[in-house]
Image (cartoon, rainbow, N blue to C red; front, side):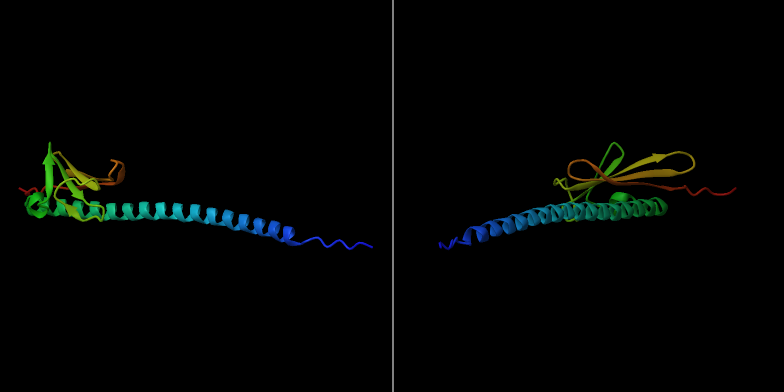
Length: 144
């Protein structure tokens, strides 16, 4: 009688290949999840910083209108062109003197007889709008 002594190494190698494919697929899924989480985290961080920057600019603009001071005396590193004030930020949301390719905020004023309104908008490096808001102050009128 002949005893068939087949090597079980081929079965072991097949099982090993299947396990490695499973781990490779799991790693690919994890990398996709982690990369999308990083993108969402960066977007959330930028939107939060943009909202803080817009609120700070709006409050400073409001205070400058109520005190009668110039906005550029409070924020000296701004540019003003055609009535639009532009403030520049670097990639870490630190004020910059000139545009370096990161973020910028604009303040556009509109005035009528009842109030002065400012539209504050913050943009990213590609020019996409991150955050915008509107604020207004009413001029002090003396009662006769």
